[in-house]
Length: 147
Image (tube, rainbow, N blue to C red; front, top):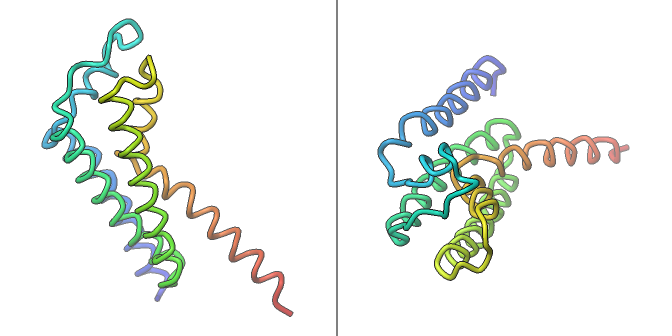
């Protein structure tokens, strides 16, 4: 892929991630946005329509995941890397959403920090920020091993 096309596509995909953050927020049900903007240290987590909330978290997670997988493909141009990343995203989703559900539904952990960070991993492309340096490092190490 030519560098100009690659960089243009990367810029477009990053702008897509920004657009998800800016434009999808008002469209999805997320009462925790206002909760974490307010005096959340002294208040209890508000009541949630948990099924609806998990569905909305899932929609946002999968939109971000799809864009992130496209970014990984553009950067590394390797289908195996994208496939492995898809598996990482799937297992991450299952772990995070089940943990979120159990903590919120059964109040397993008091306080707000666990819910805050689980939600953050679900609605932001943090996994992408972890995978790109890991794959880049893997490429550097594999290039050094070649004779």
